[in-house]
Length: 459
Image (tube, rainbow, N blue to C red; front, side):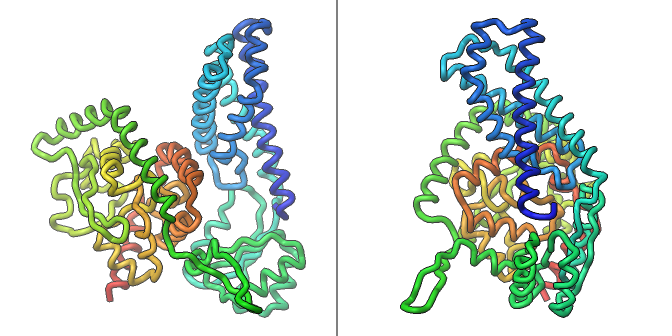
């Protein structure tokens, strides 16, 4: 991906391919179902076709089915496509009722959905087979320190093969950086680089028409969405307070209230069955696990979860993060955590107003106190209500570094829109099938790393 133009071409090609696959899937469905195109049914399809393609475009964009330049496995690609196609089928059926196109058979939509999954998956695998073996470009990586080493390890494991990485220190002379930049396709700058150095590197990159990726500092995230205005003959930037405006707060709360009430009623059979299973495994233990967490403006509240650990799991150890193969987790608890069923009682927290459907995950006071000492901006997370799901949850993993999660959370708060909440909620369905994002799947060395950082912060 040498420049932004090629990225746009890559994205456009994959989107058009997906839409073509959807169209071919419906044509194939008619052949399978009718061995032809009955006039009445075909006319209904033609009338709905613009909406079918629009719905397809919507979910292709939501689930970023065009983003194959990442380290995706076949399972990752298939899960995204299956979830997207299920939503497409549901909305297409709804559209047929809404526009009174009753001649559009449900069987055609179902058959087309199966063909869509097959065609879209096959087209992406073919595309990857043709492109993975190619040299996609050279990366100029600039940064120092432990965090830079962590990012470099990720860059050196790209999905696209053939990428070559050259690393330079942020202290390298500008002339050396400019010389290396002539032979690279894009540049990656780490957060530990000074503002002056970043500015100079970006200046050279723009002159050479190179694409630059910057890992933002927390300060740079706080400066997002700042407005510019003149103060007499001086240009000033206005930085708004961190958090949501009153109208955003009202709309978000109204949606949370309506959605949580609907989901509690809809999922009541699941809630009941899960409660019975938890009780059956340990008749003397509690069904609901209650714990104090801190919400908006650091106000404490009691969070509800189905109990997934043995009773009194932290009585002897104190606050402790879960680790892989944690013997404190029950058999039923392991299943609930992998499927996120243990989180469902938090819908009552949302209904009560303690939480939102979307927001930074609520944390315990013990960890907030320690992490706030290490990360100056950590307290900004609590400028909004915590959520059942969040931007950090769909983009990161349970074992993702605290600072990386904080970047996602601060970005979400600073760039909040109702649409962003919709996107996060839709992408949460993918998280359900990603074991690396499940609570309790982190490695023991990551657990030790967190404990060491908390210990250092408390000194």
